[in-house]
Each structure stands twice: as C-alpha cells, then as structure tokens.
Amino acid sequence: MNRIRIHAFVMFTALALLSCAGEQPYDPLKDYEHLNITTVIDAQGPEPGRYSAIDRDAIDRGQYLVELLGCGVCHTDGAFDGAPDMNRSLAGSQTGIAWENPLGIERPGIVYPPNITPDEETGIGLWTENQVADAISAGVGRHGSRRIATMPWQGYAKLTSDDVDAIVAYLKSIRPIRHKVPDPVQPGQKASEPFVYFGVYRSKH
Image (tube, rainbow, N blue to C red):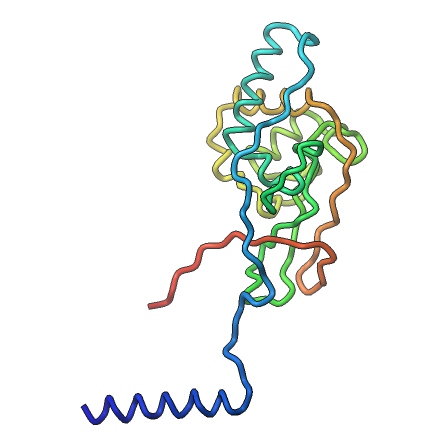
C-alpha cells in the first residue's frame, strides 16, 4: 500500500512540476482537424444515346462499379471535407493523401488523387485503355515506373477482366473535366495544400 502511495505522490509531483514549468503534454493531433468525409458519391453518367447497346451495357456496369468501389471519394474535390464538388466529379482532389504517418513524420510524402476523367491535358484522355486497366488492377502508373502511392489496387486486383474493362469503358465515356491537381509532395517537403491520412494503429503491448 505504501508503495502505491509513494508512486502516486511521485506522479503527482512530476505533473505539478511540468505544470509550473509551463510545459503542455504532447498532442500529435494539434495541427489536424476532424473531417466528416463523404463516403458515397454517385458517379456522373455519360450522355445517353451515343453508344451501341453492348457498349451501353458495359458503361452502365462500369458506372455501377465506380460507385460501389467509392472511386469518387478520393477523386472528387471536396469529398474529404464532406462537401463534394459534383461539377468536378472524378476530376481529382485539391486535398491530398499522406502515404507516410504525419503523426510520426513532420512532413510526410503526399499524393493528390488525380483527375480520372478523359480530359487530355489534366486527366486520362491520352492514356490507352490498357494503361487505365493497369492502374486500376495493378496500381501501375501510366509509364509503368512504379506503384501509385495510396491506390488500393490490392483489392481491385481481384476484379474480373470484364469488370476492369467496364470501368475503363465508363471512365473513357464520361464528360472530360479540365482540372489539374497539385503535384506530389516528397517526404521532407512542405505541402502547400491540405491533406488527410488513413492509417491503422496497433500498440506494441
């Protein structure tokens, strides 16, 4: 019992000294705010009547899959803030995603979800169908140099080839939107635009 009292006294004294010294406990979330992220976004449909029945079936399935997989949550501006800008549906996000833990690294690496509408300048308009398919199912960038950071391709790798083709057909059919997202931020550099972080933590005990 005495040992417990002594331990409690020591803890109380230490906290009192810290308080007197004006030091505040470390708060890793002091530079962050809570967001109400939009988790479901309707995909924008293509203009009707421009496709054969077969193409239309594939496009409709692609639209269904894009909504089901939640592509718009990352690739639509404002979705991370709970206010998606549907005029920029699937046209990329000005809010990035940290691919390193910002609670442990002051300036993490950040990517900004790209424009996946068929705009030739800022989107996937110049990508081949195979390049888009590889990005979806294997997380490979347009030039095949490396995996796309934060792209959840491991889950999409289980999609059938018909499903991937349907998604590609849909993305190639929608209205192109010109919208350039910020360039990726390398670890150690300061981000000029806000970002979010998705992580799973487990204690060592």
